[in-house]
Length: 285
Image (tube, rainbow, N blue to C red; front, side):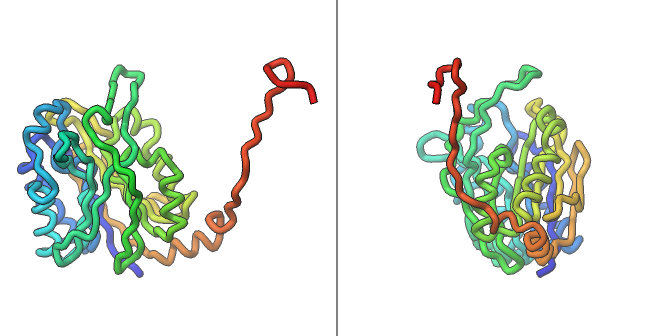
């Protein structure tokens, strides 16, 4: 099955309604270029450091402006629209970093909550504690779509290869990695992580990213990317600003790559034996 996929790059601000308008403009342009699957970045609806300010503009999943607009757009344009993620208010006061996939009829196919929380201290002084405000998901998910089986991840999830492996073993042929990578970590690891996940699982990776300096002062890396199962970069956006990348996806390439390197089939279980040399707490044999 061959189809056109688009990754929409954004520089979201603090106002969800304004971001929803930007999303609509870019999704329509992607559709005009023939895309039938369109992915937006992590935090499409709001990039906002001030957690109090962020909570004040959030809605639940039924009433969120980005979610409602995405459903309408998917129906209007007759495509699969994947909101990579947007912040959603939870009843317990926490926030869900939640992705949504809508079908061509506008109905929600599924959602996915980011599992791994970005709790890090970077060398440039940036410190992030996503778990202080966000509630982590605990369910990996795949969706059987007309053009192939889609797996889900969000940003920091890309650093946990076991999440990708389990979905690949379950039949995923395309993995989504919507993101808002920091500039520092993106420069170091973004491309190599995306290509590694594609190669080691023999699947396509589609990664729509936030890009540039945001209204709240945060800098994100951009470089939205589509990678094939052999690790080749099919399309890549620039480092800043709004952009749309489109690539032809031939799902047969997944099965060809897995036939050449059948590592999913060749995987074996094993035990780990930790040897402690004599003199470091170990006993003589």
